[in-house]
Amino acid sequence: MYRLLRALIAMALLAACSPVLNWRTVSFADAPLTAMLPCKPDQAVRDVDWGAGRMPLSMVGCQAGGATWAVSHVLLGQPQDAPMVLERWQQALQKQLQLASTIPAGTPFLIKGGLELPQAMQVQWEGRDAKGGVVVADVRWFARLEGAGVRIYQALVLSPGQPVAATARDTFVQGLQLR
View 1: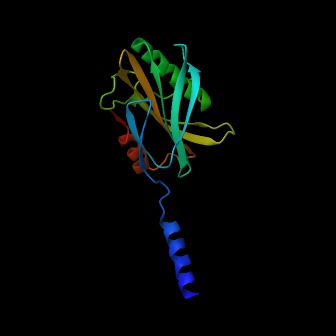
View 2: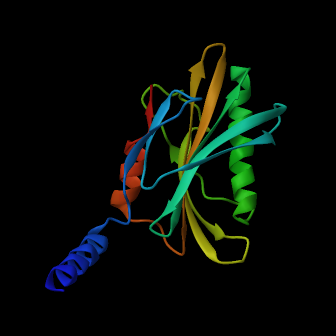
View 3: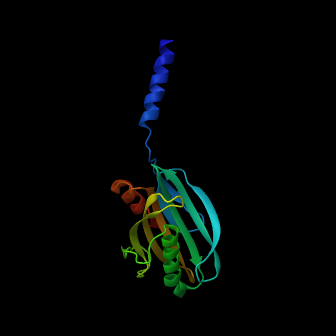
């Protein structure tokens, strides 16, 4: 009986010590990128049309620590479409977050190996979710030439009420590595 009690206590202590954010490196099979995510990700693909025709948007993401962590990407056949598609992607997120038409500007975001575009930026927006609750979106958009086209990316942390801890956000952002 004593051994069983010790085993149960040890299991409870181990469960209490398990981290909320269990970081892991995720390699993308369909894009030259690795990312650090704090949980085991799910994957999805859906078609979008942001002005350059219908195209598949690939997403990898998960929920941990009360936040949604996701990286999405799309490959464009025409590199000159990247600025327009990035702007439309940003507008789509603004609409999803129910933001007013005057949005605070972002700051430039340049990842090693990425393209220097005015639309490659980082922002932190406070908006509303579908139920009207306050959410904070911490987002990075970036692009990279790939063959004759360009792949554009969005890395997003969406948290209810307030931003995620800076150390967690920084781990996520620093884990974004173009290959």
